[in-house]
Amino acid sequence: MNPRSAGVLLYRRRDGRLEVLLVHPGGPYWRSKDMGAWQIPKGAIEPDEADDAAARREVEEELGIALAGDLQPLMEIRQAGGKRVQAFLLEQDVDADAIRSMTFEIEWPPRSGRMQTFPEVDAARWFGLADARAMMLPSQQPLLDQLELVLAGAA
Image 1 (cartoon, rainbow, N blue to C red):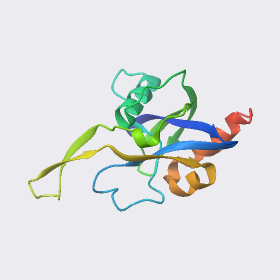
Image 2 (cartoon, rainbow, N blue to C red):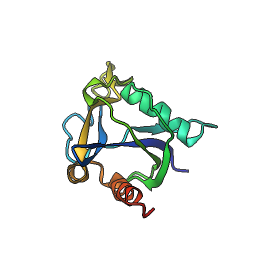
Image 3 (cartoon, rainbow, N blue to C red):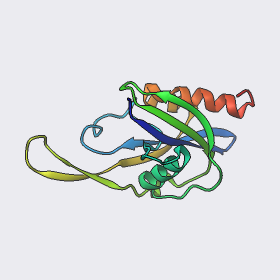
């Protein structure tokens, strides 16, 4: 069975322009990756945890903020590695420069015996839709199409 995650596509309207908040994963693997690496804040759904509760928890862990309002189910996607991600939608403006992510510890460099700590998310940024399409994981780009449909009242 493929692992499941839940996350939130946060959006805002700024100066008549629609923007989405994407995060850049922390850690050594993602350090030199930019284009095609950004994604929605998301993470694993714990056993017996509701999808929306997992999405809220993951946003809080990765961004250090609480979400205000009800999450709207957006869609489920399958990422390139097979992981299924249930995405939710919420309009909320947050200060991307003020995020405070939880950390994780891994052996780095591999087989060195040395443990290092890294943030789960090392950056968050608001993007217009065209820039978001260029910067985010290709497997998550359908979320932007669905966002546009929902906001147009077509979904």
